[in-house]
Image (cartoon, rainbow, N blue to C red; front, top):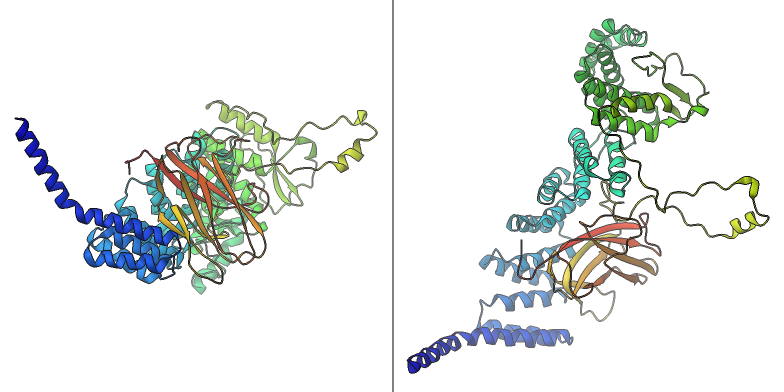
Amino acid sequence: MTSVVAFSMVMLATTIFAQDPKIQSDEVVIDRSREAWIDGSVPHALDILEQGLRKNPKAQQLRKLRGDILTTTRRNQEALEDYEAILKESPESVTVRWAKWSTLTRIGNGDLAIAELSRMAKEETNNPLIHLRLAHELRKLDRLEESVEGYKKAVNLAPEMAGWRLNMARALFDILQYDDARKAVQHVLKTAQRGSPIEMAARNLLMITYGATKERGRRHQPIFSPGGTAKDRKRWGLIRHQGWEHFAKGRYQEAEPILRELLSLKPTDYHVSYELGSTLMELGHHEEALALLQKSIELGPTSESFSEIFLDTIFRIGQSLVALERWEDALLHFEILQEIATVPPEILNATPPKETEAAALDPESGENIDVATPSGKIIDKKKLDSWFEKVWQHIPKPEQPTQDANETLPAANLTEIPPDYYTNLAAKKFKPDELFHTRASLMGRDADFSWFRFVIPAGRVMRDDLQVGSHEFIPIDPNDTFPSTQEEIYLVFALVTASYDAIPLTTECYLETSPITWGEAPLVQDQVVMSTNEQSGYFVLSSPKSEWTPGLYRCGLFVGDTVSAYTQSDEVRFRILEPGKRS
């Protein structure tokens, strides 16, 4: 029995070693070539690989290494040919696709890079970062409609990422899908902690989607011509005053048919949309009124003159939502007014509204709740509070956010000022309040244009072999997924234009799923200083403690001497998985 076992082991060993020579030979070639490459002898490294490929033309590892080395000599087209040859044989090779995408991105071939990223997204369907990066890159090329699908897939794979949902809302807003954008923001507000940085970012975006700013989305094209036929324009001119007069005097039954005809003659008239919506609200047709009032905001111009009816429109939408018992939606609209348009009672003695201006009336008391000021209309805070009370009778009243370090201190008692108070105050160096958290400052913003042309996470980095001129740093083994045992991750970047001075660049990275709190320290960080005329560089992220914690990581990128929401220029993400795991 022993002799049989021994004989079997000998035969097995013979079989194994009969298969090993090529594998062992390839590994030796790779080690020798990589050693020569690292020592700076690029021609010798390429010669070693050429000899290995002559013996084993189908060796994909040798061809991949040759492609990597060629990228550091700026022979990018030859490198792409090597990568493409591998992908023809093994289209599922994720590492090669990343290398090809990285090369296309660095040489500025945006459309082909997008195509390669799209193929990777189809291969790695469960990787949310692929879809998020694809959406971001599509926005850079103004392919806004396509980018929305990428955001949707990323959010579906990671629904807990509130910032991603806000970015999706911004993408929807930019292609004028205002209603879907508002729904996405409201979804975040329902789960965000009151007073948190995420809630602040969501509320800012919500006001934008409701038309509180001059932004209307990238695809918005203002209409300067009246449109319609000459006959339609003549009819519109004949009945316009009649419709407005009935509306202004509260004769809503008479105003309704005229305003409907006016809107059919000129569907882009935001004033008529507002008047008809208000008329229908007064007549109790709240569902149709909501649609028309919202349409008036979407059609409204991005000029200050639109503020004449904007605040009243928001207020009327809130009133209609109360009538429909949609309490949470009504609360959002009243909170918008509270943030941008309320004044305390002690300054209500202002100039009354003009007679030609439609006043916002409380439907129960009939009192005017508008106060005209030089800056436009504002809402009486006491009147608005009464509507809050109506809403809070049906939903829980939110808790007030706890005071944090960024809130101002109480005013000093002027009766007890020390003699040297003003001298010390003048000598004190003040820091501005941090109104936005760095981890939330880019959420929902149109932040696709920054100092950085690209930022690519990679396992290694090499500098090109040029002897003179500006050098370029090349990401080797680029990817967005790394094992928890990865010792160092490199963020290789290129600036849009060469640095004009010695500019510090900083990155700070956090687990994106961790709560956002003021004063938290980043898990990893790094800083580099770009010299004059430099355009390429990299950050080094060393493994925290013993190894990385599995999860999604977000790194903010900052330009200048300080790290704050105001100096944040861009962001990049990667993920950490357990060794051997890829989904």
